[in-house]
Image 1 (tube, rainbow, N blue to C red):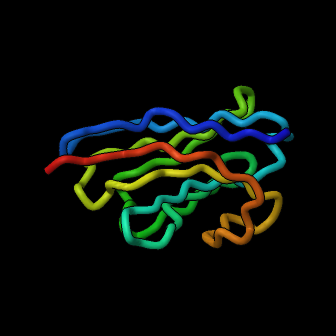
Image 2 (tube, one colour):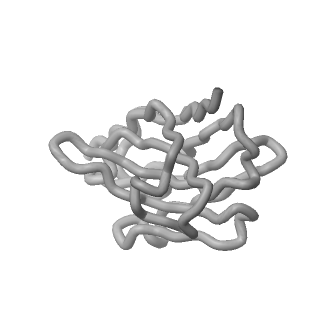
Length: 124
């Protein structure tokens, strides 16, 4: 079965950095667009970043543009989210997701597989 397993979350001070990883199994990873979403307490889940199958094109939400970087290693079936200059408003559970279609989609509906999430807490 398909599994997406996130790791790398934790507690960090404002201005710090974290690198999230999402290891995929049970699917042809290189055939899927990958996305990172986040959900803060009391808020709806929102798209953070997305990457195409080859890794040549990316999308970022305005709130993270210039601070976050999404990348993938198809040989390792892994997608990453490098998060720099973290702010308290970045505190959320971060999810990775896989979509077989929907080029760099920001819509949850396009993503058929989801990880369990990893908590990121930024202290001010």
